[in-house]
Length: 197
Image (cartoon, rainbow, N blue to C red):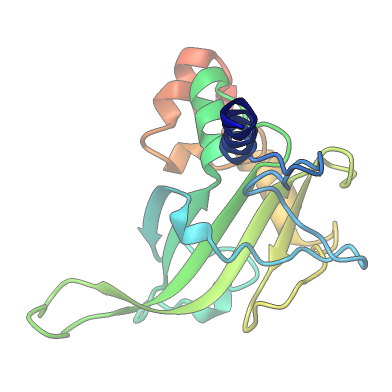
């Protein structure tokens, strides 16, 4: 009786540790882009658990640029999936299925003890950039979750995001030049575009 019990416990622990169900099905990889049957991207709700790359103020240039003004510039916070971040540290490039979230927040001044600086307020928009080489003609696509978190279709290829990122992105369609912890990695790995050096 004891050997059988020991065997069952061992198999159960292996299944739990590896994430493989007893049925033999493997779980959906964590932080992978998920799409609906209509090819809409599902909003990655756990993005604030991802790796934070950088924040800026008044740098809003995409589909939500009109939300930012000189008097009230928006903050932007950039997050990337942990798996993509670790791969970038090793190679200086972004692997397939990389996802970035650009979270745009209102900025405020004179709140509580703050009388001069600016601090972040409510979320105004969320933009997502996805690298999915088989799904998108240019390997990358952009999604605008302005005003809602329901699944959305990618912005059309005519949207300014595509040409701007392609022409100005320091590494593989992304603005690594604004990510202080990664630009040196790109230099060391030789993946930084010449114009961004």
